[in-house]
Image 1 (spheres, one colour):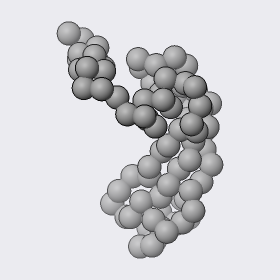
Image 2: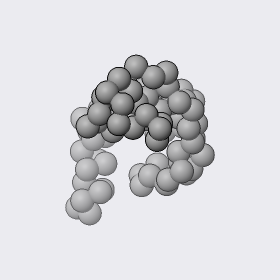
Image 3: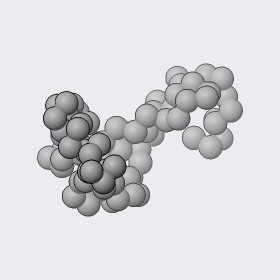
Length: 80
């Protein structure tokens, strides 16, 4: 990915395999979740998609979240 970062057509690259190396708040341990990393056009960050497994982050990402869940996450994040 680094080698192609400035290439105008990098969004045409096949997805890369990756590991999530961060803990995300509001979810059980997210370190080492398997990812698909898809390059985007220059100026856009890559798209990170979790492997479809039974982990709350993956379920939320693949199935979507309700507006109520969005509010819960936002209020928790903002400390309200």
